[in-house]
Length: 167
Image (cartoon, rainbow, N blue to C red; front, top):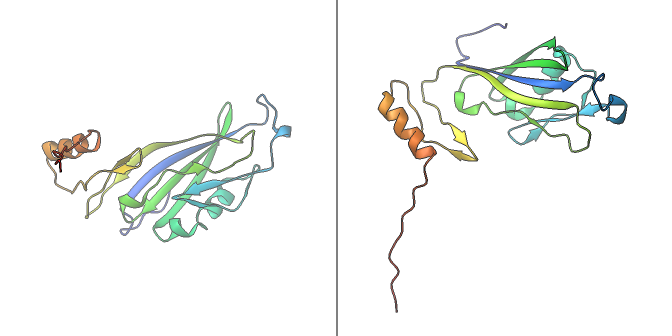
């Protein structure tokens, strides 16, 4: 799908489904552009008639993204949408973030954005995040028990109650 070099350790694929105009409601009620956001930084407006090359250029123009790596984009036509496959090629797995539809007007052209494949390796370990909370680092060579401990900590509530003192 893309060129690979030894400095690019992480490979994640996200899919963006852009609604086809033959669906209901028809596209004539939509604006001609949409916006994507990566780690809080938004692209310039992207034409609804974009192709893989134009979307790749728009994403690779986002400063936070290009300082961490780059993306390759390919496209296929599905039954109800144009499906863009965005391949992230980063040197550190901790920097891969889910793209977000930043379009504020309605109806929206972007139907869904989802992660499909995550892979690669990192020498420094990686952190997972859920609900805005990040896990501690999972280092290469961790045992199953160590990974389980990190996941348990991420998905558990740990409360410490201290006794109150009366004056």
